[in-house]
Length: 613
Ligand code: ATP
Ligand code: MG
Image (tube, rainbow, N blue to C red; front, top):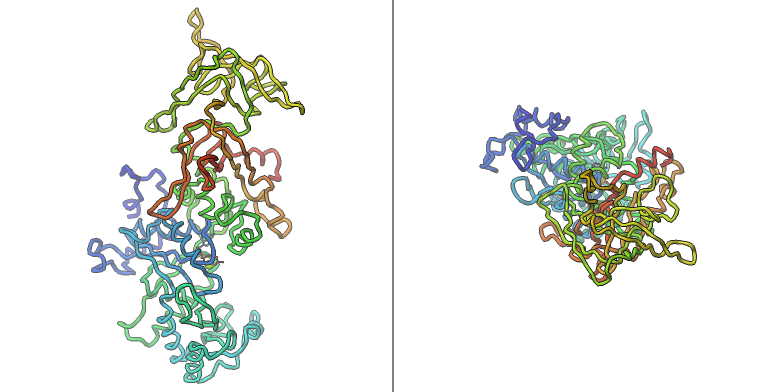
């Protein structure tokens, strides 16, 4: 059965990445076979007989999303798509202290950018806010109090912590056996704002001796006189995560409530709360009881993912904001030039398991390299320019070479690139004293200029500090297009071993280029010293001014996307250098480019040489 429902490529052919089911797909297919959740029926006449699969992504709007969240978003979304179900985006906005509208806006943008469609058919289940269910959740709380399953406890937070017990030692509360009507009165006073923060809490009456601490009469509501981004000042009590989460899923008709492994020992609580509401209700009044399923978090190497620490880096200025291109946030990755296709391919590649393990960051980097290799047009850019004068090339002449945009994509066409007597090449593509095996430009040595001619260096000038300032060269007019003509006897013409890129000095655009690299030099930042800032990579951002670009790059832009609200810079490959994209700081007079990723994995080479890296 599973093979018939494989995701398909746009050509309609079976996906080349066809793989065995992961454990959540196995669970869903078993549920579908038994019609555990029923079929869509009249709610969706177009899929009336299709078994119901309804997933959601439930972020708390207390920070920007990161690459780990992408795994969860794409997992939930792709299950909905694969099984012709629905996918919701729901803000778990139950703790006003840390939540802000700015985060809500950034999250909706990021989810749409990834392509996880939560609004439109066929997958769109809708956009929801947990805070819109506060009234309903509160009604459930009163119901539990009346059933003797919850009580108001007047111990302070410190006291509760102290009396939480130890393994095998039961916790205590003097208010556990308070009559229901007294708890109900106090709960209403809590809601009405009669009491200050911390004066009392509503707790579930479960089992103070449970070996699972989560079940030792957890708090359901706390008093917090805080303004909420959605409900303003209507509430001064707020539900705890465990109490709220299952009801949010239940109200939305979620079937498979997928979360990360740290919630495994909260699952008994998830089930207990819904069962407690259903206890004693007639069948037609029972609320929907979704199934919680846990999977292992994504933990890439060379990265930190805790929102708390990401926020600290933003606030302390270690990075320049949540969307700093070095951040593992989706907005940072987007600004750096990562594509949603690459992130989707990466998440598909790493799979879904129940085993915690770290994932080599190189796999994400390779995914973007692969995708950009296929789609990014090639351009020439010189990052550390060195002037070259071709002395036998007329000063008043300009030629145009027709350069192929992308050898991987014939449909990408070609563009004209101007050539003239004065060029820029990379500083390290010339060596006054070439070491053995140096095949680039050197005195007396010939090299191919990409797309253009062979040139031979004749002499050079130096700066007062001894560095090379100008190289003089001659070109061979017979090598136009980049190859020497055949010899008179018909044998192939002479070869050169090196090809270098160049930009015509007269036509070049000046640009700023930011060389972005991993933010940390350690696989597990902070593991060595306990402080992740000790492992910051001092070279994670190198800014080069006065870089020289071929003139076609004047057309490169940052483009707003009206559909997802994101701004994305055009992406290109600078030949021999890597993949780059236009940054939002660009101006028409000074374009700014970020390096998304180098052409090859320099870290793998470095790691082979030195185990430290
Ligand atoms: P916190 O709860 O500390 O604020 P969080 O990263 O868990 O941080 P949430 O907004 O609660 O933030 O996360 C939303 C969803 O994303 C949750 O379902 C969570 O399990 C999932 N998620 C978070 N981090 C990862 C990760 N590294 N890999 C996969 N899923 C993740
Ligand atoms: Mg969380």
